[in-house]
Length: 545
Image (cartoon, rainbow, N blue to C red):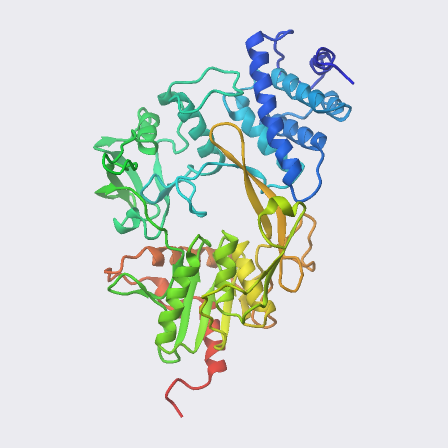
């Protein structure tokens, strides 16, 4: 078993390709910070090894974390480093390897600040899967929102790792988080490079948010914040003020208040306008119908002659089942005879509302999904999910078409599988993504971040796997395929166009008179085929003999 001094000598011995090496011995402060770094990385790996869906050794994880560090620098892991990991005698030896590797890469710009922690912890994907990764603490409890600035918009570049790294750097600079595992000094807040740059383009507007109600649209560009023009010189400073405005609290309730902001916009490169917008709590819409009523609710009758309903689902958010239940009850009151359930752009989400939505269309006690965990005692969920929900109104008789596509993922696939395996619907469209991971969250131990761990896999009610493996071929069991004869062949460009249409349709205010392409189902091959199928299934329109 190698001791720390011997291991340091092994790792710091000359060999190519190796970056510039720190002085040996390293400065006392750097070694202490490297020890902090190693403990954080090791602790995440320890929890991951306990919970991950397949057995994985700490040596494999630490080797993966080191690969993450070298990959971030554009370097290949030296053989002697790999050998040091594989011959380590235990946890302390592995910690020592992490410490010495961090010192070995101390001068790498790609690992400055918290970036080394991100590279190492996200490097665990090399021993597990890409879905195991760091995530930011959400601004709210919704699965479909990463950062909405309290008003319901997402900006280009302000998602994923760039956003999370900025958040940690900026909040650490403000003193909200302790500097843990950094070798470098903390920068001033205005010196932290903003992920949005100087062009703040709207990537997404969240339905039912303050931004949607204010008429903001995707591709709008924010040009001014509270009267100040956004330029290359002041973008960093202004972005910090926009993302993290000074905390304000209601003196009576003690609850946080999102201050009103005045935003200047440019649309289509020429049109300019200004919006005063006050943020705060809202519930994003994830269920959509055909048109909005004067009460700002969804009318879900797609074919009024044949009484065919239509509901489209986005992310499976908490309480989405309640909204879907309201839509189905309204359709039932209006004599609905068939339904199109559109899951083409459902990215998944939470299991509980997903299985309840499936249960609304199925008989009591039928199988909805099977769950398999490596450590069931840590999973917090049962192995079988059956349709045993109390007080659930069920619609089990009329014919259904479920639309699926190449973006139907996770929870969307779970709903589709439950309905298809219980012979409640036909599937129409294209093959789905093939993602069935069940994930839990653990504390990452720095920057207020969390780490997603795959703890198990959900299976179809018939026991077949939905998960697409790295080596899965087109003839293997994964995802969901449309029923024979019900595939809808469309190009990738057409699929992207249809999604843009659907997004704009969801954002249109109830009092708008604007006509949109998504209003016409004949322009959408999926809905056109679904209507044709259901009309033939129903027969004559209601009232005809």
